[in-house]
Amino acid sequence: MPAHDFVSPDSIRAQFSAAMSLMYKQEVPLYGTLLELVSEINQQVMAEQPQVAQALRWTGEVERLDQERHGAIRVGSAEELATIARLFAVMGMQPVGYYDLSSAGVPVHSTAFRAVHEQSLHVSPFRVFTSLLRLELIDNPQLRAMAQGILAKRQIFTRRALELIAQCERDGGLSAADANEFVQEALHTFRWHQEATVTAEQYQQLHDQHRLIADVVAFKGPHINHLTPRTLDIDAIQLGMPAKGIPPKAVVEGPPTRRHPILLRQTSFKALQEKVAFSDHQGSHTARFGEIEQRGAALTPKGRLLYDKLLDATRAALGGVPAEANAERYRALLQETFAQFPDDLAQMREQGLAYFRYFATDKGLAARGQADRPTTLQGLIEAGHVHFEALVYEDFLPVSAAGIFQSNLGDEGQADYGSNANREAFEAALGLQVQDELALYAQSEQRSLQACAQALGLSSM
Ligand code: OOG
Ligand code: NI
Image (cartoon, rainbow, N blue to C red; front, side):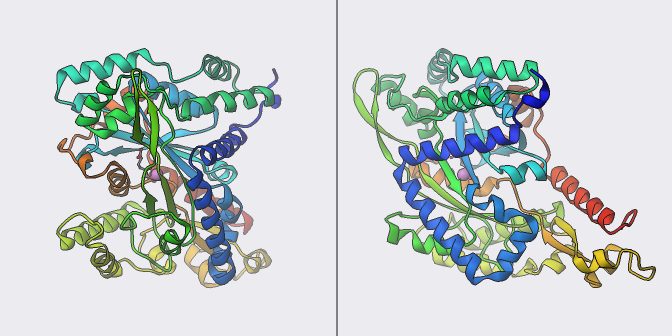
């Protein structure tokens, strides 16, 4: 088939993201309710805060907002992870970043599969936080062997999905008909299966070691455990959830409320109790939950260092884990500590704290031929020839992710695995190196500077 008859990976991803959302709405009806709330709040923000709406129009995010979401899965073996990477590659999703969750008492390490170029992200920003279970952190050798044995027997991909992945790798793409079929086949991997692959007693043993281990090992596949829409005002969501019958977790993870949001703020609601058919009798399992997020500026290494420092200082001042009892104090401490992080785009830019996108303004375009116009970036900005907006953060935060895991695993989910980051082992399992998210933001910023210079007829700025 000639290459021009292939559908773009970006459109396969957009299609898959929509199909996944539809499936999850059927599986977890509260997700549908949440989508309604998010849509109401987003419309309200767009109407009442024209500066927010205007910024989203500059960056084009306004067009991707309604379909923006991330999901999360947990796989059990290196083979599963490597094949998931091939499946996501068909949709133009690559592994970005390494997250160690062992230091937070969760025996997994993770990456985010997502598109990497701003044009692709514009078509579909769909991302999947993907965790690999670390059986090597389980100290009970019998249990480890049992888990390995169970995982070795399962096949989480349909035969047809595997064929289409191989075909895409061989030919360099998929036709529209094959892409449709691929989306349907790939969905099966992420579906909830009521039938467990283990006996009730095996489930209990796995569960006693860590609830997450049971969630990964006892089922036929890596069911999607949440799907997260993007809101423009997470505080309004947190306040609005109870009235819709959705009980939120105690605190919002991430930075505090700001005029100019940075990184990522997230909240979630508790997992569902679901009926499970073990190979011998009936039981139940809590796996799936809901989550909402608000995205803000991607930070430079300097900005990220400041964020991490201020978050650590807040937690140290709290003297414990944020929970129901100290939620209000945590919120106040966070707000107070983060007063040190400038809440002004121009200052954030001048201090090199965040990445930006640059746009030639009408005034700048009109001044193209003029000999006396400024030629430095700063000069062009001051003259109103160049406009800038923050580059949106496309990734995740390890401390927040740990908070999301914990809030859904319950207190018995706490365990101590020390600090065991092992990026090499993760990449060996993946069969690829994960990309450096900071380099991706820097490249995106650079491309926007070049395009801006070109539009203004300057060789550089
Ligand atoms: C993933 C938790 C992390 C996020 O948004 O930070 C996450 C999981 O529970 O599998 O999804
Ligand atoms: Ni999530």
